[in-house]
Amino acid sequence: MTHVVTEQCVHCKFAECVTYCPVACFREADTFLVIDPRECIDCGNCVEACPADAIYPEDELPEELAAALEWNARLADRLPLATSAVAPLAGGEQWNGRPGKWLSLPPEQAPRVPRTVESGSART
Image 1 (cartoon, helix red, strand yellow):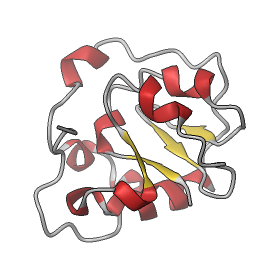
Image 2 (cartoon, one colour):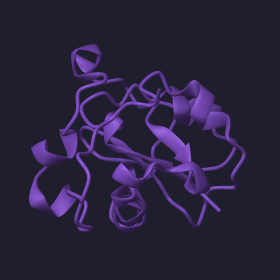
Image 3 (tube, helix red, strand yellow):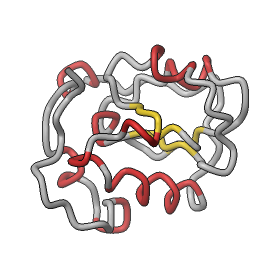
């Protein structure tokens, strides 16, 4: 099993999760991070570290965020390794909690799995 970064990371990328991860499983895009499912050891450290509540264990991923499984796996193959030097995005706080952030991504970075339920709900 793996942990999964969801769209709540998009335009936030606070990056605390990277420093709490004991293995090299995070990959970095310009405006978000993803988890490489082949590298994740399912420790859960990243979940508590994420101020955007953007990370879920795979088996607890809400249905409306299910597209994140494909998104993380596909982009992990293309993106460079995130290191502890990842800088949080300026203005990330302004994006925190906003719905529909996947829609703001270029097509090559957006999830490919159709979403049937409105996405972007923050964890309650």
